[in-house]
Amino acid sequence: MAMAMTKPTEQAAGTTTQPPIIDTEDVHLFYGSNEALKGISMSFKENEITALIGPSGCGKSTYLRTLNRMNDLIPNVTIKGKVDLKGQDIYASNMDTVRLRKEVGMVFQQPNPFPFSIYDNVTYGLRIAGVKDRGRLDEAVETALRQAAIWDELKDKLHQSAMALSGGQQQRVCIARVLAVKPDVILLDEPTSALDPISSSQIENMLVELKKNYTIILVTHNMAQASRISDRTAFFLQGHLIEYNDTKTIFLNPQKKETEDYISGRFG
Image (cartoon, rainbow, N blue to C red; front, side, top):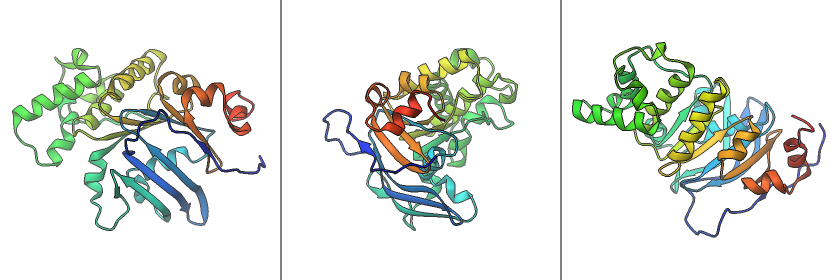
């Protein structure tokens, strides 16, 4: 679809002067010679849920992966621009990507528990970090599973295989695995798209509760989900950020025609 791209609109939610926890400026990403992100500038504040929406192939998942350098794992990728986490450039040569991915955890579209027990799944990151104290590990498992709203279901099954759980349970164990290492930010790439409506609703409720303690950035194709749980919404199209605003404005009074057309189902 041909269109004249204009500068995206962005309006701060509220009047707080709190600095953003993540700030990105003029981010371009190339897969070989193909430019997938075309100058994305966005910032994210603590204790908010931000939804990234747009049609398939628009760049939203690619952008999400720039925030903890997951794109580093893809061959022939070039990234330009600036991504700061708490004022530190995450693409600086001295950045420890293991530490970065502890601070900015990621949950994927398909539940991906390891073929271990539930307990060993949740403690995986802590053990990698050298934590051996059983009491500390036990406490971390209970805390993370409670935060993921699944402790009561699993507390008597901790040493059973996580692979035997339902899809919704597996996804919450994967979220607990991220929570156990106490990140600052949680990235979620369509975390409920493979789940049934009941499991999806449970995860949505959990995310709303988690934002009290975490910054959450969520890629979703589900317009209703974005409108229900996010504080701010960003609309991506053809590698551009078209509009970024508080969620109510995006859905009820979008400033750009492209946004209105997508929200209303005229394309995408």
